[in-house]
Image (cartoon, rainbow, N blue to C red; front, side, top):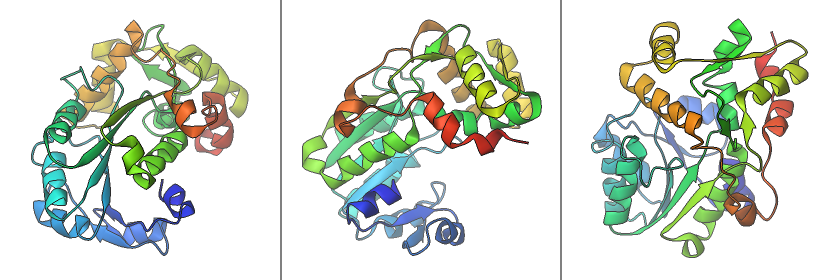
Length: 270
């Protein structure tokens, strides 16, 4: 998204807990320290900015004193627009933390745009990567469910467009999906072909997946619970529907899961 904004000629500031790491990842881009658990960093991070791109780190489950407090501090500093990376279904699903952030934005002053992507193709290279590298398996409680995997590169293009043209996207909520629904068995086949070794899809039980996240992956309890909840809906088709919004906003079809795997095959090579 930083690259997409720079391509539009817009000035960008990146914020995170380690400005030194940000400087290494984004050479030449101004950086500032921001820690959701330290409200004293909120004002300085937002000062002088017209707009804010807001992301919830998976480890943050309590949003009132973190994301929502940052939004309030940003408004005080004059931030007029907030583009929030939410999740599909957050408008009705009160269980996911994104719901409370959306409600806070809607109830407060200033402009906002809600991006509600479905399951990220990049989950294969992040949340599922260790299972693929160590065990040659996809292990999630998705049953026979399918997901219209969306590429974060496409989501970034939509976010940049919303930030560049706020009037055209103010107070809009966009559900963003990829162009085709893919089962996890099909995802395993795509990976197998790209990597030249067999990748299996092993449907997990809900308790088994929670234990897997806690014991083998070492996730905090709250983060493991949210991740398990987000996956359970796959069994019932919550991420299967293909929405045309992303293609309409981009003016082209979105990337497929096969596109993502082909472009990032080195992530799963041993």
